[in-house]
Length: 343
Image (cartoon, rainbow, N blue to C red):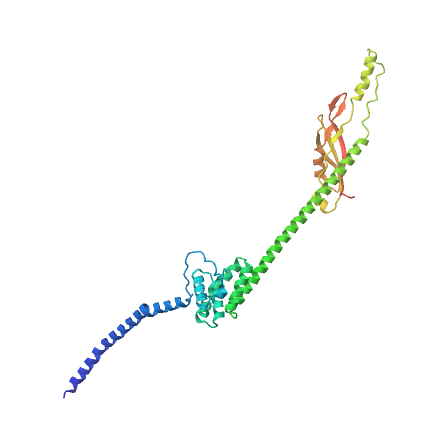
């Protein structure tokens, strides 16, 4: 028998088997995938829906949250799981209080410790719920954040995320306390500054009033300019009429009289340094009673009160000097003292 023919026949048969095997494996793979999508997966979803469902991918309904059940304590396990699933779909993970998924799942575990649906749901949704608690912290709703953290601790007390959330909550509380304290301190500083400014203004007004009073008293006591003493040796013709005109002309000759004195402003730097002084100012009173050409004659200390003294004198108002019944210019000189109140 020709062995070469048998060897070629066996080799040809092995080459034909390989494509058939691959085709069979491919068919079985397609059947398995189709069975998963058409039979197994829909069946699992139906079972989970009947038992309360898995919340790993909650679907938003776009509607407002329903009111909480009337009597949660009387609900059985399936009812609690159903309410939890509904809360998950409406994104009520931790809020509102009494009507959220975590509370329903925790009550389900009280009914049946170790319930796999509730246990898996709490574990899978814990990160999302932690984000909700963190948002409450960032929004500075500290009471709500504390409630949510306590609820998370009931679900997984050993989770390290709780430590982070508690640290953030404590830090935000301290930050708010510091900000509130800063506001209080600023208000106190503003009140103190306002009180100090009011006290300084009152002291300045008092000092100005006292200085004006002293100046008016000094002006009142100052002697008037002496009238001319020359009297004609012989009265002009006209008899008694000519004799009466002479005293009238003398009476109409007088010095300028201060009507209105403006108190100088006390320099702020001098007041802060508790510094006092005096300035002698010369000036001219024109025929209208206004002051011009006010100049510093001397001052002690120098250059501290000069400007304020000159500015004040320039605003004084006089009754002009009279000569023969006619207003004329005159000159004067005054010493202006700067003293702090109470001295």
